[in-house]
Image (cartoon, rainbow, N blue to C red):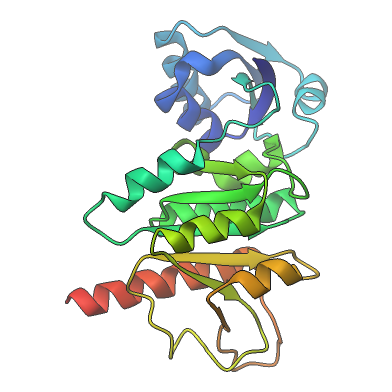
Length: 253
């Protein structure tokens, strides 16, 4: 095992609540004294996890960011730096559920804030897992984990060697795979979203890669009625997942 950093109250609290055995040490700011920090300290103390108070410069250096909110934790992670779940195991478990599975595949998202926000939306709208290619994506860094706001503790994150092969595996399992695209006649308004489903969203600048796009069962656009031509990938993710849950709720009403 190796050590990684997580920062921010949501991310650190979520790790303490769900996987406290992986938390090695917590660093907090000497300049922050409030109820929120007191609650975190009390939780860490109850779990017998060491806490160190350090100055803001040391904390920023540990976090490698100024977005730490006054708390950074050192946690155990796997040798390759991922903390991911096994894709085949997650798929098999999802197919046994009473509701249709829902997956989010991210095709080489580069910005850690976007990655974390996409994972947060996946958790908010009930995705069974977020699937990332092992190469070409932003890592699950402290910045990404903070943006995810603790969602990585509740939504499985699967790293796969080949996203196209992953899509094929989902299709063989009866999952309909939709790629989010701007230029297509199919939209969220005229596409069936009620069955087993996987959404694929692409890179911030280039969108879906060619092979990924070609392997999807269909390409679907988010209808845009304003002047802007596209949405940030994390916003598009939230819209697609919300539309899916809204369609499912309507069909079961």
